Length: 180
Image (tube, rainbow, N blue to C red):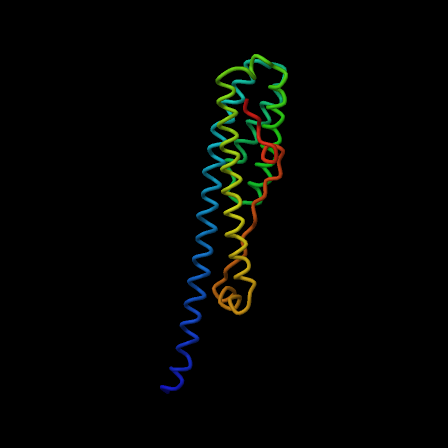
């Protein structure tokens, strides 16, 4: 009986260590998703100000402005990375369109308020990029642990699931707005 306990003890300790590492990695994913969410909310707070600034100069671009407002609301209402990625990608494209519209208005481009909004937007886009990199690294670590032997035995037993990566393919992030 004592020999059996001595043989099982290392297995139990191993299982506890692996379980704790899985929990740690899962919590890193959740915390880093929260960081992305905070940055996306910062961007969402800037968008109405940017829309108002451009709207004051361009009355005929109302459909673009309405579409941006709709996408912003839809993106704020979703919580899953896949759906959020799709909506945020569309929102990024629309913000880029808005910035292109603003290019046609020299008075707008020269305004201090507009330039300040562009600086803030550029800063937020950089923070989103950093938060996304950290999140995707945390997702990669968790997913590798879940798929690697022998950790996968504990992961499957306790029903750990792989997390989804978050990618924003957008012209705004690839080429952030230029601030002069």
